[in-house]
Image (cartoon, rainbow, N blue to C red):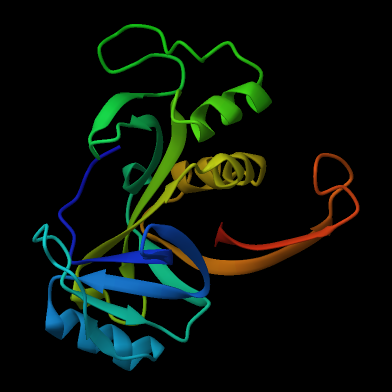
Length: 207
């Protein structure tokens, strides 16, 4: 997958202190006040200054949009890597889920999926990280944005199940894709929450 220079990023949540908070609507971050103002005009919300101590993003917009249409230009604008992040915020291991970048085997490649998820949750193994590069369909001239889903077990499974990658590979050019925050609710059948209603919001990509 090619890594593109970007003007902004789409998020499905934010950090409250050190606790992750999921959102029903999209949040945009950008280093440009002009880009923040433009996205707020398109999708609602208002630009706010955020902590820019790392010099990366300095504005955010909590939009009113649960669904945003985007233009994915080429098949290499979307891809999934398996990544293990270290406590220092740097990548400790990265690969395709079977082979690491250094050519060695991913030590978790042959594990059952449930065990692999548990190890990744504990910070001991790699987890899928899906990145999408795109332009906003409502204003392509704002430049390229990206969305990153870490721990993208469900997203990657759903993309493969729905034939998303095959459709993208077989397209003749840029394609219009819906990036959506979709509420999900079900009654757990087993585990510590068996019999309880489990609710969350997941990201979906649809042609």
